[in-house]
Image: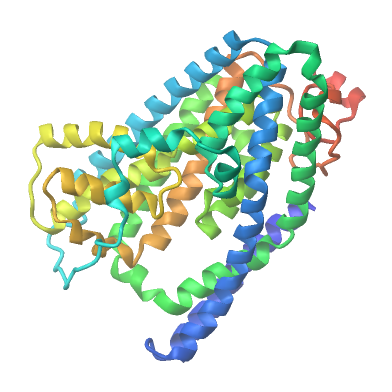
Length: 441
């Protein structure tokens, strides 16, 4: 099933690009019929993302609570959380610093002839303050947080709930088992939803190519290609760091997460990849007690691709307007982005909001955001896939640090969906042959 799904996703990508191109050349740009067709095609990814969002909150809650309860003590939780934050900060510095270095090397904005740029005022920069971010971390109602799919607020509530549950010891066993089973139900639903993924990928790419055309990628070809070159460098750095801790097994990790990467890239949504990423990390050997805590935390604080984009794009706008920033100002920008990028979870058009807030703080023209809007969808695809890679590597490395990384299973194994507390190695929902596991161990 898994191999077939990957194949059909790739087919959906190719077919979507082909149909989008045909529609784009067949209708005038301002033809209402083209907009209507693109809107109907966009229904496919929107339905898929709605179904994925339906799963996210209960899945994060169930996996995090059962994971924390399974750790047994708050010391282990604090140690894992500390290591995770240490990795996230290091990865943030690397991502933002690499973006600044490359944009100064390539200078994609130098000599750019500016058109009439008047966009950017609709971005929610007024809400993007430290006060707003701190208050947004803590939920007033967990039901409201789940309804809005605010992963960070769900994470905070689950943290309190899991620690309190572990303090009850044996008396909370029934609730732990209930959360365990809820996670398996969510993963079973995920299997059903994922069968619709190729259609969502097809509709997403067909819609955007039909309305924007491939010419816009060619027009901004230098900027887009240099940014993607930067993403490839970032991937190489992240996998190299992973190699230091995981050894040759980091190569296997790339194979295990290929499907979540494809989903994230083609839909430009990290949420679309999260349920499948949980499953594939289970197969890779990451116990759910680790991934259930680190992955949601990473989705709020470890968006490597988005962080690199903020520094790259901010300097691109400064170059386009002929504004020189000294080395000291760029270092100040790096430190500013280190803080502001941690608040992007749950903010609409998050990366653009961070860029707009940074432009304002450094006296750069916010209307320069308009230079990015045309190709932001294509850039978002790459940075979203990079976010998935960064979080997968971070979770695997932290698991290795904890000495809990298990032997890998077949990446294409069918899910069994047994409760994770009955599995031989603590992994959730996988069809594990105990004899095969003993041989590998």
